[in-house]
Length: 183
Length: 436
Image 1: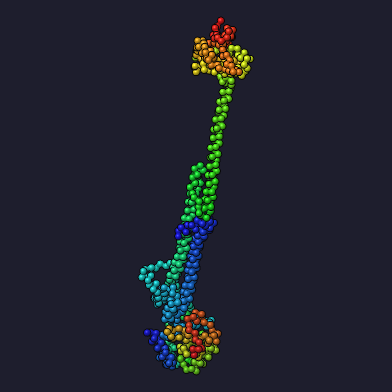
Image 2 (image 1 turned 120 degrees about the vertical axis):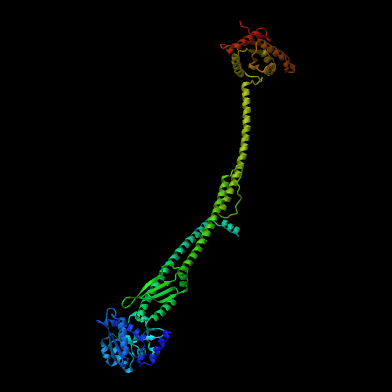
């Protein structure tokens, strides 16, 4: 029953992409757990100097949701992960340059141009991207969550490979691989 | 059917019987070998199964760990359901979180049945009861996995192994048992054959076994022995017959020899012409009688007699008539003796001598007179158609009771002197020796 409700909610969120109220708290919680670990389970961990840097891009409209995500990350990893403190940088899509030092960026919904620009930027700087919206994979985002019978990571191997980023095998094993044919 | 088997058994040679025995023994060894092989296979199976299970556990643990770390609990449940479905030998799965709270549990029918029966014993150690689940990033323990694998396939393999081994071993034992019974029968037969040979007596011809219809070595040996026994029997019969014939011949020869000896003895003691005892035998007899009379202190008398004018008979009628005269005189002498102890012998030529034990002069005189009487009527000798005159005899008698110092020759000398005296007295008379 819970699964069905979750599925319904997520489906509705996809159709009403610009509505902040459509972000599911449970899904955000999953993302909050995943984000630092994706850094640690990819070659991005090599870029870590002192802290894990995660950039959260959002529209002004989703600032509160972005704050919520940051809170969840801090709540789940109060001491950081594997002795690395986690630094969350929240910013608007217009200030995407602020994410240049991050190892991973999380993309909330925005208009297509902003998203295209951001994805282009992250590709250029080899920064791993994870989007709330699964359709961003089509635009070149690296990862999202596949919400089917269960919720599992959805990985765009092509874009990751283009950025010369490698993922831990274990991560690949638990993930669903995004194929171009799914466009 | 059994008869046919036994006949077949009797017809096959010892080599094949030994080969059968060896084959059955190899079959037994083979069953042991198969048992060992299956044990090794079971061991390998167990190792492979353990490796596979270990691999499975080691494979799924990180995924479970990652899902836990991601908060994807539902994914873990689906994943473990999938694992349970793909691995039928998994009987029980239990996933606990870091707080030791069960977040997933699976049990198949076998596990439930065992749980209800309280059977927690495992045939083999393939139970990975507590596998810690570590965070793949931080290596922190974030839960535990309890996997329980079924040992039914292993037990089934063992059962098949034991069943096959048992069948083979049973088969081998049955065959070896039958083989031993048949071998024992062989030895029993050989013992009987041996006993018959040992108790065989050629004279009784008591070999009891008949000709064998077996075509194996035992039958060949038995028939060979029977053939040999027949030959021994026939040779023994011939030998017995020969022995009997020889014994009869020996008996016959012995009898002839005894008769010859008897004749020879008679010849050595008897005068051939007169059939009276000869002088040599007289001397032996007289000496014995003398010694007896000496010991018994009885009288012994000796009569020496001589045919009167015998030379004249020979000269007138020839020696043949003389011999006839001698025969007639001898006959008269022999017929005149009435006592068994009286003895007459031809002393030489026409002289005769009579020994009388326990007899005095009178007894000797009576005998001499009886001889004279018998001479008168006992001679019927014809020469050239005419009967010749009967001859007469002169008698010299001596008698003595011999003492220790007496010599037997004195009695003979006295009789001889008395005979001369009778000749001097005109012949045909009886003279007793009288000591001067």
